[in-house]
Image (cartoon, rainbow, N blue to C red):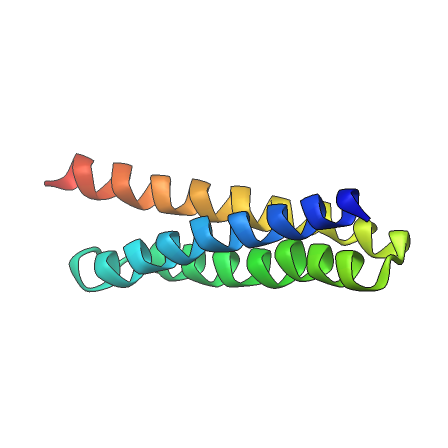
Length: 95
């Protein structure tokens, strides 16, 4: 049972981090009118649903097979950060 609590806490921690990242995307969207900023936002949402959602479901149900979805959410998070970094570099280069 304590290990499932740790799983739940991991899901909530990553959800919190990426909620802040979505706030950054919301602030950046009007300033950086690039499609990669919007893509980053959607990837953060998908990552939250897949990563944190699968960890919540795993912690609440105990079904270990749900853990197979978690890495896909992690890849969405990474791709979102790469898209946001790409936008930042592209805007920094052109200004």
